[in-house]
Image (tube, rainbow, N blue to C red):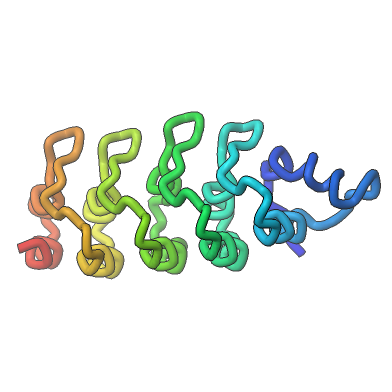
Length: 173
């Protein structure tokens, strides 16, 4: 099994509690046990100031992320100690994240219009990078605000015009 870099900060103490001094369990197995244990605070920040949700998303652990998303007590809009929201973690290479984003959009409590620390929403980020497939998904989200204004005073339509993405302009009109 693979390991998740930097997640040991959140799991080391739990590994020791679960396994005693013989804590050689795979990180993924320990994280799975954490997620399954309804008494564990899955929204807690680790020693690096990040939460389990952000780490699983960042390291593309789809099976564990899917399992975590089933927890009703998950704070999908969690902000870490550096004021990063989940949309800040989404890499420029969006193709890697399509399945993750689809999974997140299944949660009704996801704040689709939340601005990241740079003042952009997920729609702004996807528009800047011309990711039409994911934009179509976002536009079907009931509470999407396509006229949401970024910190730079841009709407998604303006960005699509500015970057000369005619297909996106049509979607927003």
